[in-house]
Length: 375
Image 1 (cartoon, one colour):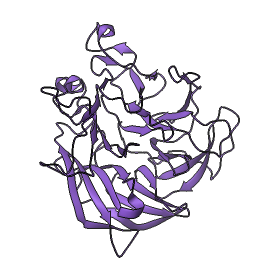
Image 2 (cartoon, rainbow, N blue to C red):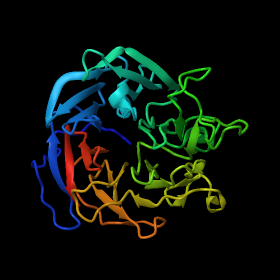
Image 3 (cartoon, rainbow, N blue to C red):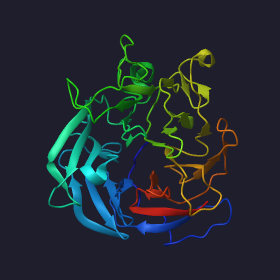
Image 4 (cartoon, rainbow, N blue to C red):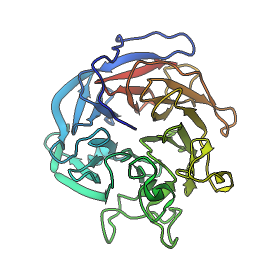
């Protein structure tokens, strides 16, 4: 994703939009944020969310009101740049009882840091800065394609998205080099303390015992998996991978099955890129892709599992950061997927979010978050 500055001319939406069938309807949740990139609901609280700002702040939102005092402030630890900063947040599956959460940011040297924090004992809605423990560090050769998404899978492992290291042409083919962590999604057991660090590689990771490969890798062949998510009902993994100069793509990985090669830089989207004969390679092709005549940078979303939008359960929503379009993907067989016509939003879509009831939200880099109430 290319997180360029959101202009002051971004169109503001009213608090609620009503939609005809096939159109997007949004309801304002909160505004006044600075470069928001992600949001997560606080377990046990229907009216409380944690919102991530790229500039290094995590704020609490209660009953639609932004609490200015930061839940966590790492602004002095991060690097600034269009694709750098505080990029991801994941609450531990037992957050309600243990108060543990994880963040992903680029440090002042530009390298990726995944760090664990704990909620302060005496202030349940403020993090304890002294609890910071680095889980994994990954050197970044450039200031872009850092990935940034982190999320817990249904089995309780932490997944970490890493881009190919930046520049424009897939530097030294990181996406196809399983000897590096770049261009991959990692799968880590962060509840077990390893001999050499703060995580253990799960025994069923696909590259365990493969000579020369990094065992942390769950899937690879990715250029910049800015946002990915798990279907809360099936456990399937959905990945939005930002393209080079021709195609954006959505990738699909069935629950519990690792080792997928999503093609970069042998292929970009549905066509060959560095390898003109890539059709013969062992590539998992995208379930949805679109060209640069339609959008500029894909933002992966979520499968809708809520109850407020009738007849839409099982539909996957994704969007485009540059044009604000949103697509709804549906399937009759779970194998081939059909995309709706692009639905305009007039937003700079930095991310989607999901609450504990499966309702979905769109995050606008210009400073607001909207609940999706129809599509």
